[in-house]
Every structure is written in C-alpha cells, then in structure tokens.
Image (cartoon, rainbow, N blue to C red; front, side):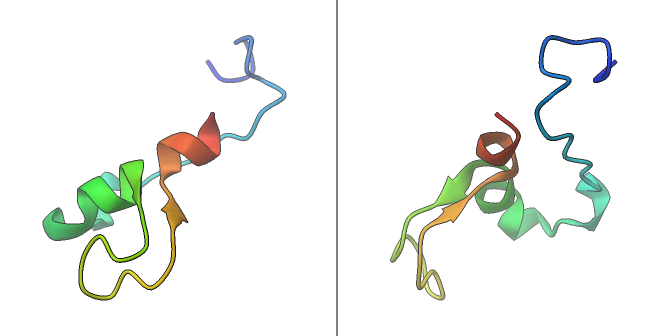
Length: 52
C-alpha cells in the first residue's frame, strides 16, 4: 500500500502498537512538548508527525 501511494517517497514507519504501554500511547503517537509531564525534558515528535 505504501509503495503504491502518493507518499511512497516519504518514510514508512512501522509501529508495534501492542508494545507501547497504555500510559505512553498518546505521547508516542502524537508527540509531546517539554514539561508536558514528569520526565518530558525536551519536545518529542510523535510517530504521526515523523511519518508525515
């Protein structure tokens, strides 16, 4: 599907959703800003933003 799409030149990000702890799913998929929660010492792009 990826190779036949308009985005085939962009990155393909494979994600094992079962391996992401429930508490971290939102942060991993959508990213977060520095200070958003304890331990967020820097901004982090989520998988969706990286794949876009």
